[in-house]
Length: 65
Image (cartoon, rainbow, N blue to C red; front, side, top):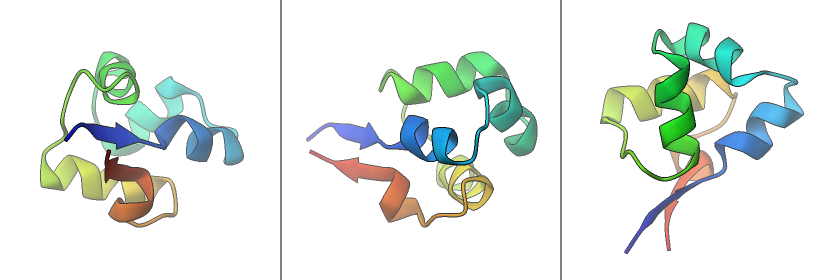
């Protein structure tokens, strides 16, 4: 199974840039890039922070395929 993400579409709905989201969750923009490309699996805390910043649940943002 591969962890997938809907971060980009949720970010677009809120008109947030990768930099904006990175600042909201206190990580570097590169971390957001790697998450969106599926090159990095987030910790539970980071997944929670991202989901909260995007006004969604963790399950809505991250899913296994």
